[in-house]
Length: 375
Image 1: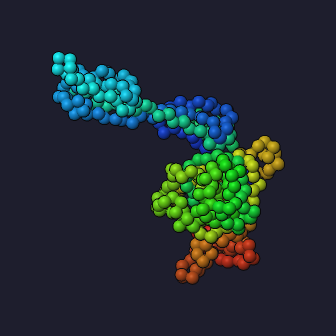
Image 2: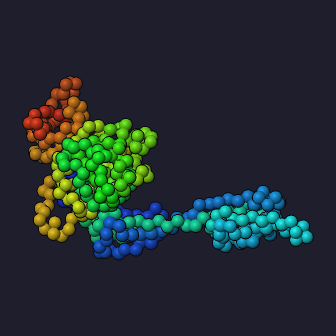
Image 3: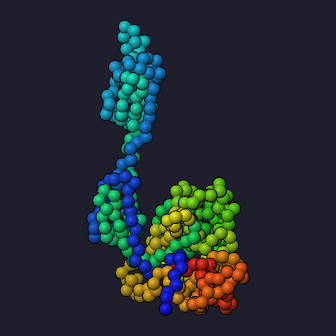
């Protein structure tokens, strides 16, 4: 019998996960294949060229452009400090000289006797790439970075903001249906990845920033709360570059939505363990989901069986989420997979499946209207 496949979020206790860590421009890779790395270890580094500061020295010293090279006290390639004299006019009989003191620190990149321009290049900015995930280096990409692999507990979200962050898992809510409010955010959550239940409020996010939390994971968020926190409508196809004081990952969607019980229990089972989290989300071509990655120790691996399911396969009993009305956001399991096409209310035909909700109700929905919760 042919297998059915559908896209879905990964929520799994154990998976072999790989991350590719690369520099924006060529540089030095400081790990080698086979090295064990911690999430916060630096695996590659380089230097980005500094900012360019153009100086119209002819205007600044009120002289012809052709006289600028002779008045420079620094040559091309020389370093200069802020407050140091760059150029001095000859004056009249050695008197009434005019000087220009640099306002920036950097290197003289060019001096032009044609335009009278002097270009100062600011100090190079170091760029360092962290491992992000505790694991083992399985491939080195020469002058670029490396690939790291590990056995991890892995949870993907629907939406997120903020970049990479690290910290221990800290449970704030007692159930997957409890709202994450500011009164349950406490000072001992500093540096932690806070796990909520249902909707997270704007006040709770601000309180988490105030106490210095690394991140928040919650089931849902109101669109207005997100706008109030950011101060603007997001309205972009990719997130992750926001600098808002923490990383936020939403596992279910917008509105009053509880976190999937399975996801909540999985995160709760790893309370206290160090994790990596990334809120970067892309909804166009090359879809990218926000994620929580929790490495598994050798002791934990010994007690855990491998996942028997094939990724993306719709099997009887697999957990799914309906992603279209009238059952949007409701979780259930695959009850039946009819092989024949079904006539929908619109009159069109489509492949369908039967979903059994936690309430016991069974409904028929098009296969395109569900998202597999992989695990």
